[in-house]
Length: 165
Image (cartoon, rainbow, N blue to C red; front, side, top):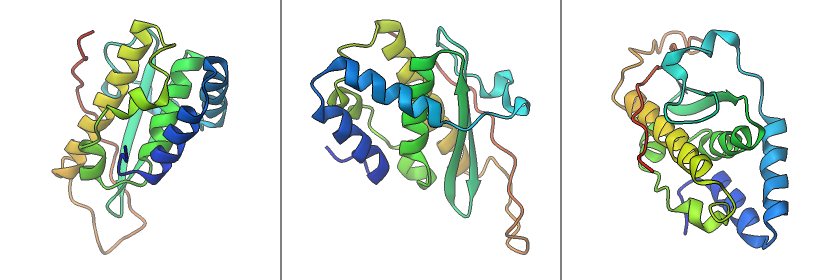
């Protein structure tokens, strides 16, 4: 199943190739360690993922028509799942990210070893990212000045609706 994101497809294939849940978790934890620190200015309710047991923040910015993501979580596994999504959705056009089918999660094999609350949190993170992508797609970020390509719009806070378990 292709997701429309080459980076996400590679990570799904890597996870799918391992039948060992421990190796999948090691990969997710490795992704967590690679995630860049989130500036404190984005640690606010507007960027907080609702419906997660742990504290999770995700921020989308649109630069030259492509999405760029930042985020963080206070729980290592959740941070790794967030990192997987951030890396997988990095550089996509808003419409691509907004239409991403969450069915790819089943292919990773992670759902079998995630607790229900963590699996639900993963879906809530994805829902928030898709909502931010939709908001940027319809221009909530405001006009971008073509005269100054160095200028970047402010990140878009988007209310998220938690996914029901």
